Length: 389
Image 1 (cartoon, rainbow, N blue to C red):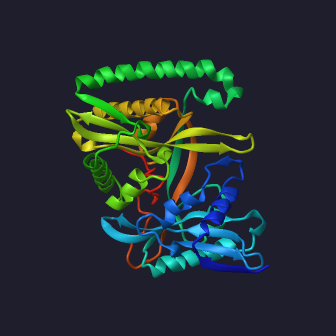
Image 2: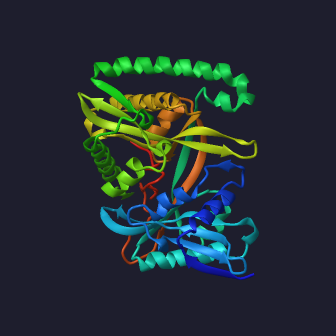
Image 3: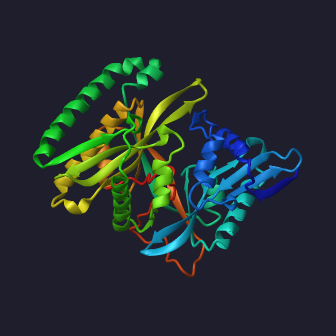
């Protein structure tokens, strides 16, 4: 059996979507990719190019059996701009594993990043997974920051999981408790001139360009202040992944926080179907993308924490209104404030992935290991899943 290696050719998106759905659904759960989503995520994004997707092909049947995608971005690291590559969708068909295909694809990707003058590479890996221990660490990637995952179940989950109907009283109690807590918070914050506006894409009320630009700039400004490593989101990227989305469901709901009529923060989430193939159905999940409050506008930490808690509560309310069965937060382990707030609200918790970095140019970049280190991954379509304040 021979394996050939090449980059993306027009029409490969059909097999690439199939490859992803096979490889990332080993457990019987996950998000589905389509050929159109492959194009939107990689090839049709601003600056996307075929060379960013490395492909392995069975030379006998010409079938795609493995691939790696690596979008190139401009990363601000220690206040300096560097070209960086983000390793995504590392996949090899089950019958072709153990043949060194993933390592060969990864080496080709490293060579491609160097040819593009990239200084840094990032990826997110399962901290207990085979790939991290047998491929990424040996190839020089370093663990940087863990991701904590928090899930808020909404009452709609009962429609999709009738087997958990005995939990209905607890879910109903939590819903009532949430409403009471929200009312209490709203009364406190109204006295301080805070309010929230919720904008759902299904309502067909377009966000004014000027307001959308405020959100983008606020995201970039907060990133500069709180992270050593981040991607500054350019206008074209923001419009592609936040305004010109593939489906209406991928367009975000905005939960906008005001004080004295001025926008001081916002959260967003998208609605996606999560497939449970072993039991034959799917559930709609709300996946939080951004969570931002301008910390500089607060004179004391208690008011900031109270306002952050309020934005969390309104985001939960908005996910209920958008008929989502659950709301998911992915938060940097270094974000003590937001993790503490989510813990206090008794959201379900489990450990997520780990952000890893590789230094592609030892002569130009300082070590990644010097604490404290704040960075966030390069995944525009997933949004800035490195949630903060």
